[in-house]
Image (cartoon, rainbow, N blue to C red; front, side, top):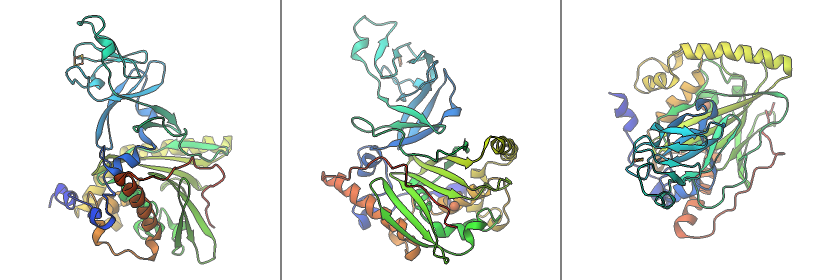
Length: 395
Ligand code: FES
Ligand SMILES: [Fe+2]
C-alpha cells in the first residue's frame, strides 16, 4: 500500500457535520471554521527563515499569500498573485517595504496599494490594490491576521519572562488536519504510551493523570491530576496554541524542564505546520551551556532523516514503531499517531472516554462558536490571556 493510499483514507470528511451540526475541521474561507479561526493572530512562518529582501509563497487555511521581509527588517504579507495578470508575487523584487511584480513591474506598498505601473497611464495605479494582512513577530515566529477589522491584542499570549533561553524548533509539515494535533495536545494520557519507546517523556509516565478541563475567557485550562493529588496545569489558547511544561528534548542532557508553546497552523484542511517555541530557564552560564548543547543536537537532527519521512514510513508499515530511534523521536511518534488517524479523522465513529474530557470540552466550545457563526448569532468575546495563569509541572 502506498503512502498516499493510507494518508488519503478518510480525507473526504471528518464526519463531524452530522454530529456537531457544523464541520469542526475545515478552515476554508467563508466557512464557520474559517471565520472562527480568522478572529485570531495565526502563526505562519519562522522569522529566521526569511531574510531582508526575500519573498516566499505561503499557504495558510486554504489560501495562498506572499510573505516578504522589507529591506529594513519588517515582515509583510500580501496576496499570492499580482492583480494585473496573476503572476506570483514572491518571484518579484523587494524595494524598501514595497514589492514589485516580476511580470510587468507593477509595484505595491506593504499596505497593498499599487504605487507604480511602468507601462501604464498615470492615475491607473491608485485604482489598483493587492490584499494585505497585518503581520508581526514574537518569540521568533511571524503571526498574521486574516480576519475582518482590527486584529486582537498583540502578542497573542504571554510567555515565561524569567531569565532563560528562548528557542524555536524546526517547522514541521504534518499531513493531517490541525485539529487532530490541537486535540492531541489536550490528551495527556497519550504521552505514557506514544512516547514510551525512547523514554523521552518518562517523567510524565509515572502514573496516568485524571484529566479535567474548564473553559476560560481565552481558551481552555486543563488539569492532569496525579495519584499524589498534584495537578499539572496546561493552557490551550484559542484557537490553536498550547502552552505546557515538558521534559527536556530527547538526546539533550539538560536537566531543566521547558515551557513549550505549540502552534498548530492549518495549511489547508489536510495539512498543517507545527511551529514550536520553547523557553528553558537558565542563568547566563547555563544559557551558554544550553546553546552549545543545542547546536550539537541541531547537527544530529540535520544529519538524520527528516522526521516526517520516518513518520510516513511507520504509518505505511515500514520499520517498527517501538524500535525507531531518531534525535527527533517524539516528533516522529506524534506525527505517526496523529497523521495515522487519517488526513481528517472521522470523529463520528470514535469511542471517547473519561480521559478524553478536555478534547470533548474543546469540541463543545468549537461547535458552539461555529454554530453561532453559521446562524449569525452572538459569539464569545475572547480576551487576551492573563500573565498570571501559567502552566505548572505538577510534581
Ligand atoms: S502580472 Fe504583475 S505586473 Fe503584470
Ligand atoms: Fe505527543
